[in-house]
Every structure is written in structure tokens, then in C-alpha cells.
Image 1 (cartoon, rainbow, N blue to C red):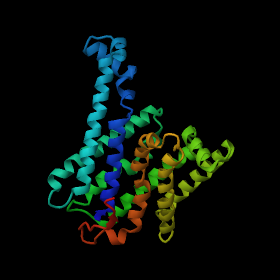
Image 2 (cartoon, rainbow, N blue to C red; image 1 turned 90 degrees about the horizontal axis):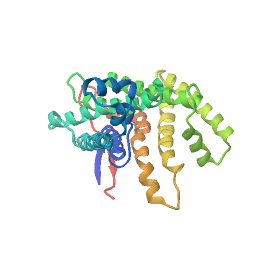
Image 3 (cartoon, one colour; image 1 turned 120 degrees about the horizontal axis):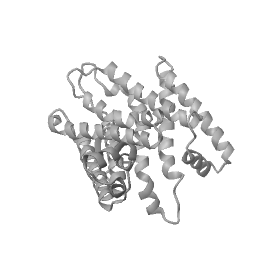
Image 4 (cartoon, one colour; image 1 turned 180 degrees about the horizontal axis):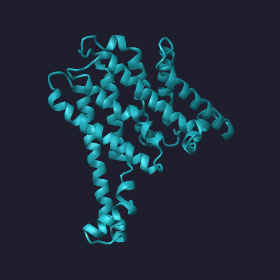
Length: 291
């Protein structure tokens, strides 16, 4: 049996999920490297080349693929460091975690660019790119329990509120949201849209209740359940018995890096037991089977 800290586990899941994505699938770096309005002046002005040649070159695609794989290796190293970081080795383990955190911010910016610069697209990843820096903060001398819990609540509120904007319809409701509800509940499209609309309203309410004493506990419990359910929905809605292993390989990484959407509220719920009063990080141990 192994014992692992919940915060470290959450950061590990974020990094390992993104590593899986980058090493085996794809990431939106082409949205930058194939942006004609942005890079054409550089390609043709600085390097004197042709934009058409650059955009259609296999060498360009190989270069982008190389960047994606390198980022995947970086996330893999950061995931390992998130598990083993402690007061003795923090001088070197914090470096990959910090670089990985910056990488997650850049990834969120690229996802935002890919989605027509919807701000909600960036901020719905707040937990994912914020937790690595929260982990590093716990090892600072200036660490304060109350400030840490406030930061976690803000990350939760921003993530759920931004996610709610899509479900509510403030932005075009993503087709994959509708498809997941239909596949899981076996309902009609109109019911799925209504379901998402209600879920979006609940996300807005949650974001407010998180900061109201005595009511925040109930908001956090809902956030734990909804965060874990929406993470698991990625594989439940897209699982096919005809090719189960391929289905898992294709979708499990999305589940993994979203699990902290439910684990972070749990972290706050257990806050009094997790965080010491005098600036010392205290581990909360969870038993995880070696199997």
C-alpha cells in the first residue's frame, strides 16, 4: 500500500493526463504555428521564405510534432516531481513543476485561441494550471493556511463558473456536451440542452455559495460530486464495447486531468485537517493500492 498526499495526487493527475495527451494524441500548437496573420510577416519578412511553402511543408509539421512530444516528456517529468517533492528535495523538484505549470497556462491560451478567444475557455482550466503553483506555494516560508484555502476556492469558483457559461448557453453550447448527455442518459437533444442549462445555473450558484460561511460546505460537496461525474463522463459517454482498449486509450487522459475538478473541492473540505496553522505542509494520506 502507498500513501500519497491529495494535493500532490491532484497535480500528478493533471500532468500525467496532459503527458498522455501530448505523447500519444495531439495538442493545439498548430493553432499558433499555422496562424497566417501572426506568422506570415515573420516567415516572409525575417526568413525570406514563402508562407505557402512553410504552411504545407512536412518539415513544419514534423517540427510541431516534435514540440508536442517534448512538452509531453516535460509533463511526465513534472508529474513525477509532483509525487516526490518534499522539504528536502524541493530545490530541484520545484523547477519541472514550475515549468510544467507555465506550459499548462500556454496550453490554455492555445485552447482559447482555438475557440475564437472565448475567455471562458481559458478560465475553465483554472484548476488545472493553478494547482501546480498552489503545490509550490505550500513549500514557501510565507505560506498561510487561510490564503491557500481562499486561492483554492477562487480556482474552483472560476473553473465551475466558466464551465457553466458554456452549459448555460452564454457561449455556443459545445456539441460534445450535448452528445455526452444524450449518450449517458439516453435522452433527446432538447432534454440534453435543458439539462445543461440547469447545470450551468447550478455552477453559477456554486461559485457564489463557496464564499458564504456555513453554505460553502454544501457547495463544496456538490462540486466534488459534479467535478468527478463530469470527469468520468468523458469515458462513459464515449465507451464502445466493440473496441474497449482503443476507447480507453483515446479518452482516459481526459478523465485523468479533469479528476482534480472534483478532488480540489475535496481538498478544501478537508482543509482543516490538511493544512497546518503555522505554515507547515501536513500530508493527508490516502491509501492507494499497488494493484
